[in-house]
Amino acid sequence: MLSGTIYTARDQAHKRLAGVLGSGRRLPIELKGAVIYYCGPTRAQKGRIIGSCGPTTSSRMDPFTPLLLANGLKAMIGKGARSKEVKEAVKKHKAVYFVTYAGCGALLSGYVKKSEVVAYADLGPEAILKLEVKDFPVIVAIDANGGSIYG
Image (tube, rainbow, N blue to C red; front, top):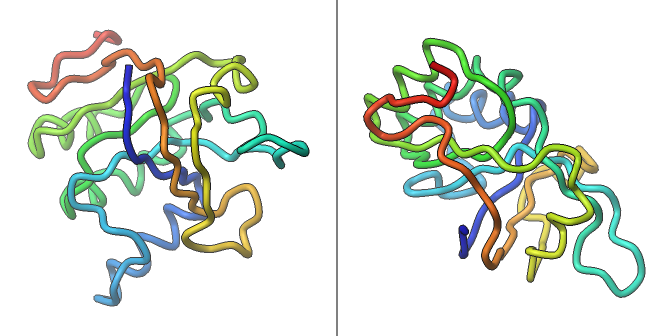
């Protein structure tokens, strides 16, 4: 069960983050020690903090992940296996890749206690959100030593 601050970011946000790193500009979020959840939440219904917020397929972020890990990212949450390059980068940078329950976005939204857009609002559901979560269910899929549930 994970509690604390996590950021949502999907394909387009990752592409922008990589572009910023490549240009030497300052990132809109602090990557050092950060956790990124591969998620594009739906619009929150009245009286709710966030809409459905299930994980998206992690491999779509693989082209960007080694760069983000090299710049301080410590954990990712998503679903599915990762590339050999990501697995090696996780081990090299002593990071962690978590998975969470796919198809359970409505359930997972209940663990989100606070949500705010912090970057790339123009991307709509792919904007980067800062979430405060309490007891968010995750499973270690790739540990800091390179051990993987995927083999």
